[in-house]
Length: 305
Ligand SMILES: [Zn+2]
Picture (cartoon, rainbow, N blue to C red):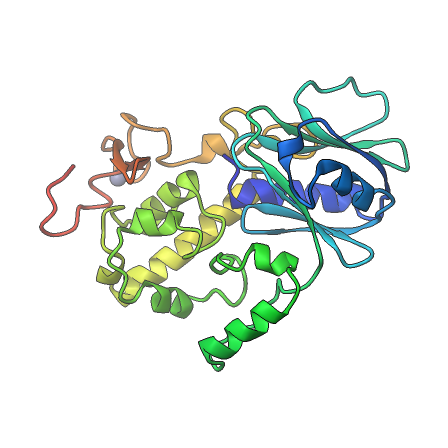
């Protein structure tokens, strides 16, 4: 499943290749892919003629910004991919939505398992300032009065881990008073946006923290290590164009190279790159978790699993 580095790779590809392009037509081949507006015919009518100005990312969604301020959101979920197809590229039987561009290319949304969703929204609300100085009540009133905007799609999402505002201090504030296991919390999109199973395991190995540690048990030094590790595994993922184990491809339809750079994920039974001992796999919250029992010692009172 694409996580932050994979979605960021797709967004950067699209920024390079389709910023400035005009969508002359759209064909929806699987109606349930369209989340908003409904029905799909309405979506097609509203997207026709739109000009793409820039492409970005929020959480695990690609954001395609349009010249009139509206934003197209694409949540790739399990097997979604956005591919730029030059004229004459053979049709793709798994393309669920096809956008025709004025220059003859197609922007294809391919999705084998069909879990991904596309929405078209009014702009605004994405750069919500931290609202610590406003009362919850005032904030709620302001939000219900405003029209539904793209920012509202992400209102339950936590901070972007690669944002300059995501400091070790901010991470420490968010961990405080949380009794959840580290692995569970890292996967919680309301805690931090964009991290999934692969990069959570990799970050915990790099920080030398056991995935079963309680979030509020970390020392200040451990919080700093975790903060640094989260950001470095995500940056490494982006520089390798993402991790592919199957479906994930960039907008060039090619897999990323990060899988061979992983330290623990899917390396069960292989030696740890740091200490040479054997990587183990356990299940936490129904998710496979890979770690080194020597470099990431179990918390006090917890038997080694
Ligand atoms: Zn180790």
